[in-house]
Image 1 (cartoon, rainbow, N blue to C red):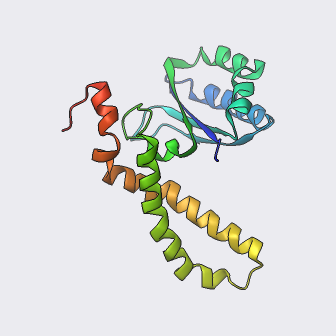
Image 2 (spheres, rainbow, N blue to C red):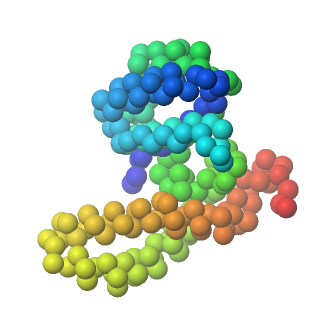
Length: 188
């Protein structure tokens, strides 16, 4: 079972304070890397499509994330970051497959798990067949260990960046109907 936890934090920074914020952010990222279970950080800087910094932290389980969240390092960073923020940051936590099932433009908790399983299997099955036809013959000369690494890296990358976002958009009418109903949101 995958216990990975993904934290997405969006920060709107005061104009002119971006460089200071980024310098402090680099420090806190380096500190987070030293925490047990840290699996990576990704930072998206503001651009034409978004006005906020989006920081994505991943930890291998909830306990290690809690150690990070309760740490003096993180508390100190949040205290210092108060000077840079234009508004309070928003934070979302996802465990396991939920990260693949975020409805664009919402802060929903995601669809029911059975729907996530159905869509994941529907996406994964043809992807495995295609990779076995296209990539497997190319990596066959490699030792089995490296074949698996290459195949899994390609598969997870395609699922994360291409297939699951497309499937989530395509099936959003079905995936998020319960979440919309609970929130009182009507379908367009």
